[in-house]
Length: 263
Image (cartoon, rainbow, N blue to C red; front, side):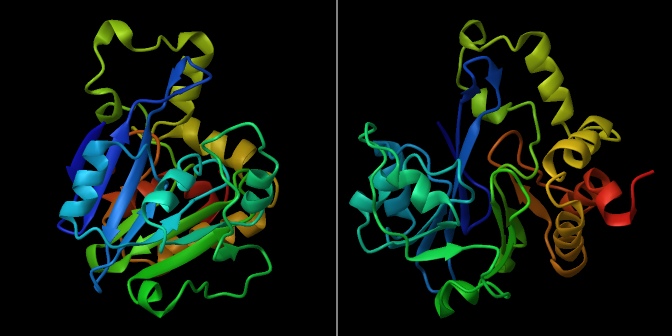
């Protein structure tokens, strides 16, 4: 794990992770210190001793544990046991998904305090303390039921699978070269489809034809609203490199077809 302070209030926890054991996409959790001093943890990764120590150095008051979609929830139970007063937050479908799991000791059946769904009225609200620092958008048409967050004080956008930024360089930086997975032809194609480099044509096609196909108009409306109304300078994805400069420009380029119409 690579633990790094992205801003004085935002810390990232970057880990190696391979999809299907072959495609090195990495994983990332994010801890944010609110204006109140409380902590919100998004897409929690393994709660190691180093992770606990870092959380303690940030004040240790974990008040919110957030599953940013229906895939990034594996370690929620471990964190909830360590920080029992934290509120569990996630998208519709995730509580039911976890209840179906009976043979994995890592995945408990803890009740969620806030569930955001397609029928939840906007603007989405967690509580007064959280709402003071965050904007929230939910994308029900995304296959993984994405919830996207803007930490307003530091202009940091936090997301899970909406936008990858491969390769996962930082996330694999502590893994010896000979131990890193070899993606092969299919993995190489997937990584090209999820790169923001250059004109990002592969990602544009992937987002248009695969990710947004369930409700493209609804998807378009939300990514346009984020682009036009949110003030962000950094994008923290779960998979791949953090976009630390020119994040708004990257968003506009990657979602160009959704913002202005497919060419």
